[in-house]
Image 1 (spheres, one colour):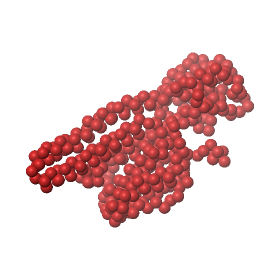
Image 2 (tube, one colour):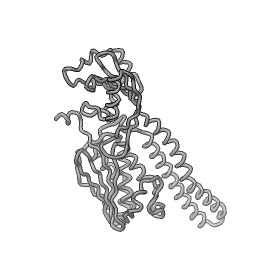
Image 3 (cartoon, helix red, strand yellow):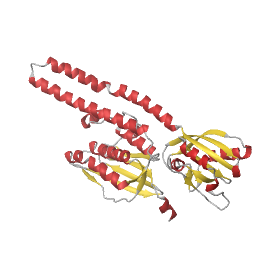
Image 4 (cartoon, helix red, strand yellow):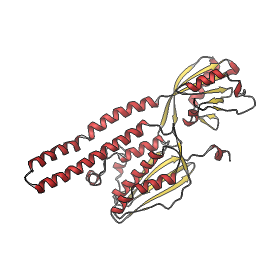
Amino acid sequence: MRPVKFLRRDLEAPEPRTLPEMLLETLNLLDGDSMILAPGEIPLFITPGVETLGILKDGRIQSSELLATVRVVRRTHNQQVGTIEIPRGPIGEGKHELTVKVLPLTKDDLVLVLISDESEAQRVHDVRRDFVANISHELKTPIGALSLLSEAVLGSKDDPASVVKFATRMQSEAKRLTDLVQEIIHLSRVQDSDPLQLAQEVSVEYVIREAIDQCQITADNRNIKVNYLDNSAVVVLGDRDQLIMAVHNLVENAINYSPENTKVSVTTVSESGIIDISVTDQGIGISELEQDRIFERFYRVDPARSRQTGGTGLGLSIVKHVAAKHGGEVKVWSVENVGSTFSIRLPIYESPMESVE
């Protein structure tokens, strides 16, 4: 049985224990989330997902659409069904698409709200569609190259030098194919998941240090120093592995697109409840025309450079999806031949105890 919360905001609200036990047990067994509201839209009972979805904040309903629906039900005593959108965070474009069913309860003028997250079904549909499109679009090139190279090897069996040359190319294409498949799987998993449903508290400092550590060999090979001097005590809510992957992608991109013997800097700034994780390089930069497209799947600023570095064109798309899923956003500043700064902006998590203090 899922845990539930009983809330009491003033002395006029009925005691939570007066709510029918059978009703509470039934609500707790439903797949979706629910809450019971007293007059004045005071929440007496909620399931955990209500707060996770951002419907409630400080005990108050955040959606004007939902409040309007509840008031219609109180006035007409008829149930209402509708769809509302709830932002996933204070910034970014991510949203929850929720279906709500609001019903009057005869006892004490209470109202029952049943909530279903329709974005889950839409997400599954989008993942399936995109996965098929990604596979058919991008795997043709490396598979075709492997086929041609294998024919070249067979045709050069009496020329050892040519065999070695073509076999080396085949190894390169095989690695590219492996990396591409792995990135497609990563993107599909990010699209398929909702990190805020089973969220955990994640240390920003841990995420950054782990991401940098994963890129250290690549940085050493190019004699690029990755600087991170902050010791951020900030915590965010979400999926730790996804956040590490997003920061890793930004750091790895910065390394791959920077000249050798330069540096990459990672910094954090906290302001107005938002943590800004920025990765700055001294690389080739990105033109203004291309800055609007770099987060598209498979878009590459420099295709030749991407082939050299093993880039798949999916790294920044993954970053964008991870940020949006965590109620945040990703920003870019860049000047050609000067460098770029990519920033992941996420809502800072404050525990209930911190909020009270």
